[in-house]
Structure formats: C-alpha cells, structure tokens
Amino acid sequence: MFRYELIGTDGGARRGVFHTPRGPVRTPGFMPVGTLGTVKGLTIDQVAATGADMILGNTYHLRLRPGHETVAALGGLHKMCGWDGPILTDSGGFQVFSLGAINKVTEHAATFRSHIDGAKIELTPEHSIEIQQALGSDVAMVLDHVIALPAPMTQVEDALARSIRWAARCRDAADRQDQALFAIVQGGLDRTLRQQCATELAAMPFEGYAVGGLSVGEPPEDMYTTTGFTTPHLPADKPRYLMGVGTPRDLLENIARGIDLFDCVMPTRNGRNALAFTDEGAIKLRNAVHKLDTRPLMEDCPCLACRHSRGYLRHLFVAGEMLGPILLSHHNLMYYGRLMQQTRDAIEAGQFETFKNAKLAGWGHEPFHETASH
Image (cartoon, rainbow, N blue to C red; front, side):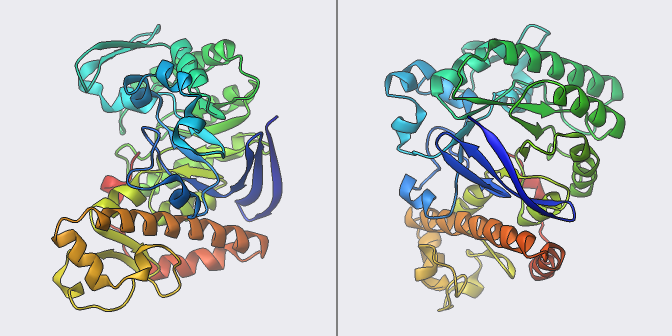
C-alpha cells in the first residue's frame, strides 16, 4: 500500500513520490506541523493552498488533549481536522527529550509528568503505536530515545542501542495494514554509530527511514555532515525523513545530501512572531522601517499576506491584531511549499546545485538556528 518512486537524481538530491493510500507525497517535500490536529492559526484549506501534500500530528500532545480515544471516537485524526491527504504522526520521543527535567527513561518505557496537570504518563514503544493507530495516521514513527548534543559517547551509544530495540518492539506491535511505519536513525554526530544504526534498521522491514536526534543543539554544519554520512546507508527505494528541520538553508543543504521529507514549526512559529521568509532573507515586520512601506513581502507570492502592504502587516502586529500572525503563517508556509516545488523542478532539470547556490546567495546569513528545532 506504500511505495517510494524515485523519479530522478541530481548529485545527492532526489526527486521522487511517496505513494500512500490517501494520495501521493511529492519529494523533496515539507510537512506543516499540526501539533494538536491544527496548523496554528490556519484552516485546512489554507494549509492545502500552500502546496503541502502531508501534514504532521503530535502523538504526545494528542494523547493528552483531547486523548487518542476521543480522536478515534470522532472518526480519526483525518476526519476530526478535515484533512483528507496523508498525515504523519511522531512517536512522542522528542517530547520525552524536551521534558527532560521531568522524565525518566528505562528499557521498558519513558515515564514523565504531563506538562498540563502533572499526571504521570508511561510511554512504552507499544503504547506509542497504540496511540498512533487510534489516531489513524498514514505514517507512524517508532519511539526512539533522543538526547541533547553534544553528549558523552557512552550516552550516545546507550540511546542508539535502546532506539534499535524500541524500533523492533514498535514493529512487532504495529498491525494496521493501512499505516506505514518509519524507523529513526540515532547515533549523535558519530559516523560509525550512525552507520551502524542505519544498517541495522535498514535490515528491518520498515516503509521509510528518518534521521533523528539532530537540530538539538549542535551547529548546523555538524548536522549537514552527519546527514551526509548517514543517508548512503539507508535504502534507496524508501523515503528519507529528517525530523524537526529547519530553516530554508537547512532544507536545501540536506536535500543535497539525500533527504526527501522535512517538518518544522519554524514557518508558523516565526510567522506568529512577525518574521517573514523571502528570497532576500528574513523580514522582521515589527521594525519601524516597514511603517510606510507599500510593497508586499514578495511581488510574485500568491499567499494571503502578499495581498497587503508591509506597512499594513506591521500595523497588525503593533496593534496586537490576530490577523497578523495568521497572514504571516500562511506566507511562510507558502514560501516553504513553493521552495520545495522549485527544488523539485531544479532536480528534474539537472540544475539543483545552481538553484541552491542562487537561493543561498539571496538569503545571506540566517540567524535562526536557535529556534529551528521541532
């Protein structure tokens, strides 16, 4: 029911299609993050208009609110939120990492306290799959053990080994034929460990493979290097997903290293904070220089925000109007969606490197990596 079709390559960049029962996912592709069954501030139709083929839901957050049983009773995540295309759900592993001050990881499970009411939650690999099957996503992620980087080698090795064992437990627990299961490669920034993990997981029957545990504190160049020596050890006939990444530069640098799919909150989180992505770099709309600017953010952009002037958009944020975050979230997701379409076209034309270099030159320095993750 799930199949990856490799249409062509240009250097390390891949142009393909991930076929799912709910429709094709064009790659390289970006998945907007709909943590709680909604991409913050946008309707489903507005999200679809950005060119997204697949969106992401969050297992941990949906487990807490409204509860996976409630989602199932409402007809599943697709029906509940109104999205009829493919949905990928993460496993909760990153939330275990991000709630590190209130969690404990053992071989059996990750145990932690709800950030809402302090209730004790035990997340085993089997329970993660149970939740994702109840949600009814098209792609479920295995539960992995995420750690901050840099980290002592013994800690990296321990998390890697546990992630492989948990991946096998997830595979054994999964029994929905209409739900693909993706494994997650760990191993820190170590070449040998990443290759070991990728090789062991590639020997298991998964429908796709993710590179996890990056954009968690390491410099961007280390992320690119790690991706570059990991992807050659993943199956060429399966999609490759880099989790929680990132800036426009991050996307192109990792596409050059063989990544197919991405997700990140950056477009919407930055949009809610008055920052817009453009071909000339980021525009901070709260700055007074935009007060009387009659130009749109981008002349050729079909998003909702670019129907208005920069001066009007700035006014919305200064006045605290909720329309400002909505419009900029739509623009940023539209920018990411168009960037992916342009990238696919460039790969097919054999012009990816030229395209990438032109984009990087236009963006200049992007000081956003501190907010890029997840």
